[in-house]
Amino acid sequence: MTYDVLGAGALDYMPCRYDGSKLLFRGPERRLDAPYVAFLGGTATYGKFIKAPFPALVESGLGVNCINFGIANAGVDVLLNDSFLTAACCGAEVTVMQIIGTQNLSNRFYTVHPRRNDRFVRASALLASIYPEVDFAEFHFNKHMLGRLYNVSADRFLAVRKELQTAWLARMKLLLRQVTGKVVLVWFADHAPMSNGTASLDPVNAASPLFVTRELLEALKQDAAAYVEVVATPESADAATEGMVFSQMEAPAAAEMMGPRAHGELAHTLGQVLQDLV
Figure (cartoon, helix red, strand yellow):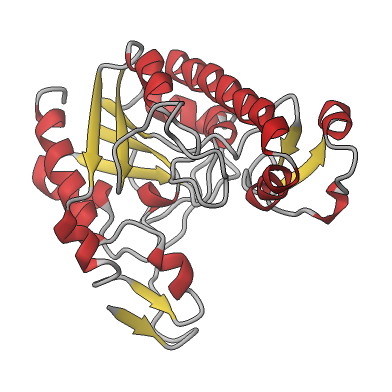
């Protein structure tokens, strides 16, 4: 386990921007005029606290430039609505797309920040009518808000989960249609996908990616060139945060993330799939 004194020796993500995008990506900045594989996703793809996340590990084995377009706490909206990302993926040999949760996207019940998708902006009149006793002005983050709704009424929350899942599937299908070329979907978690009937309804304690079930994946897989499902082994789970770089203040967040050993397992499996597609 690697602890860094807060502010000293912190991991340098070499943040960079590409022309045509307002988003900040993990660097170093890469060329787009040579063959490359594009990696879309959230915090795991970005590699928060990880010196060499799986896109970098895949590159070392594949021998083709792998460009990390992961965004910490990303929802589908930020991936879908950035024209640079769409163009970059369309120009890639293959696009690898990490499966991310349903909570960080605008829907009929609430609106999220267009770039920082984990930030709650406002509730719709429809959601306010379902939960009249909730003061939505107190929320800044989607998961906090969803947790409160579940605690107020688990029965009413069923409608919220269904809306998130419906919006997520529609948005993901649209994203896949916009990316002209081969797309590999990646499930990367410490558990296998669960069915809608067995997955926890509690948004605070449910496993990530939140509310993405086997049924949703089956509906989505038909639009992709390949689907890779990597569940971290017990060995990587035991390794936990070993090799990660974070401060003591960041330790709770780091403990919830996939560690370097799990990234290595994903890179090994994904590299084999990409060999046949690049």
